[in-house]
Image 1: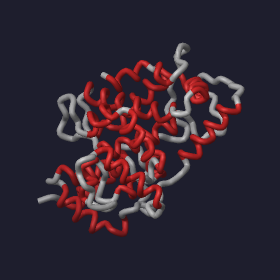
Image 2: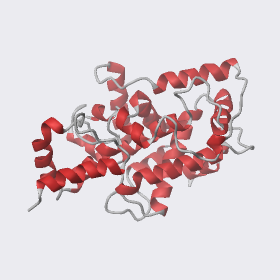
Image 3: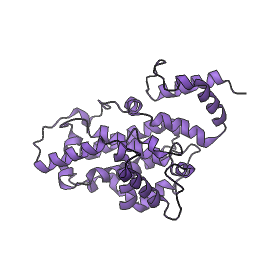
Image 4: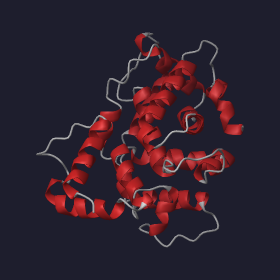
Length: 292
């Protein structure tokens, strides 16, 4: 018999492990505490629902994600070096466009957003008919529940665009990660779609898209690359995803270590973007993982 009070305390402890500041007055489940405990009681013996609980903590709202990746970002060595770049008009325009994309929320009532979500399904499962925008089938892709629109709070529409770009541009790598085709996987595998949203958000923080004009070395180098390749961010997303997966397999990671794996991925990308001989996004050493 599970002690429900202890289970509730476990959830609060888990959130704190991911650096979330849990305020009892603002706690989103406070008014549904009994429902939460009843759900947790049922989910303890069900892997998929426990995974849902954990991925909720991984993604959550934009405020909660801010607990994982703060606006200041982690203090990496490359972040302490600043360069004042005189931007060209095309660099400035493309960077602003990227900032606008990052600030666009997913709107489940917009027809174009609905079509994009359906496009993702068809790219992922071309031979499987989707029953609807709200369906149990979405869980197979690694969404938290039956309605993916509730999961875009952290990455917005950009994260959906990133997943679609990944599926179209590098279909082999996309399916390899989606279907978990390589490596000995641990019991608590990361959910593909939710991981993708976290990666999109991580990149927006790493590249300081909240700044009008970032000056850290890896950000400045990225802006230079963006001036030559408008798809640089989307390709970087694909690189980040395969790099994260490779790190996951190499360390035999589990759900509790997802944040750590993502931080290591971020640090590696910052180092590679700061290299002097990187002139294209495809020059990054980790780019080769997309074709390995």
